Length: 295
Image 1 (cartoon, helix red, strand yellow):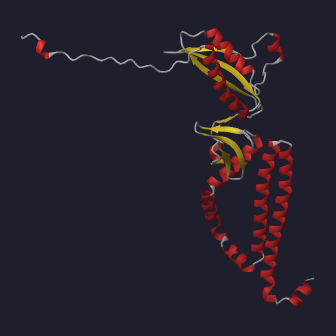
Image 2: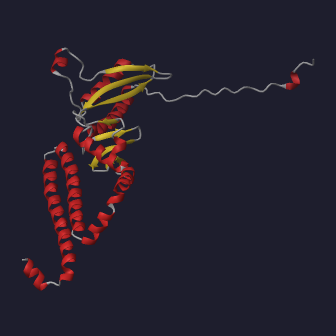
Image 3: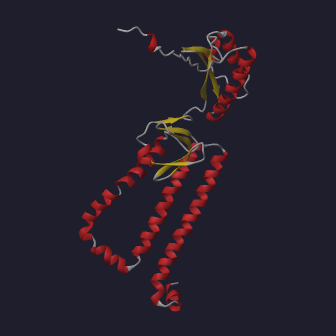
């Protein structure tokens, strides 16, 4: 094979062709690997296995980077001139390594942070999370550098792995997808508290997305399926809260919106008043200076 290669191809072109072949094979191997892993990801997505999807996505990114680094390094090694330059730089390798180390601290921290996220799984692709107080959404991607969160306005929030690894993360899907949704309503002091509590309980029970989250022991003990309590005596209202459960955060949000509307309509029909802010204005008459007695 080498004789045929030398016979039909000018030796001047041997090196460029060899380097081109190495780069071409690198691209082919990376493409085939990507397709295989993408098929595995789709299979797990169809099975609703987000944990394996997270592992496979991170594994795909890592393997692709490794394939390209290996291919490019091998192609550079095949060029004698670059090997000579590399050998001449060995004298300053220590200083160069220190400079690279300082420059790559953030990048390395992100890679390690991403690795820890995949290993310990505080969240995974498809989970609904909240970071700090103003960043929330669904995890869309976890790669070597950052985590991508799609918020509810369909915007992407990109957070470096080293940053999110040190943050307190609220995960609505960790271990259990069920969500307790509080339904808070305020009624006037003149309204019937027992009737208002009964209306709120009925509306929650009749909603199609409501689920009974009680354990068998709690059912045997007679614990209420929908507790409704007075939680605050406000300045102008008696505040009530109903505890309602749903299978997922999405269902809980929809159920909460529906219940606020349906309870308001039931209150209107049953004569339960929802108070609104009142303002009392006091007008003072100016004093008549002419009537003041002389000193």
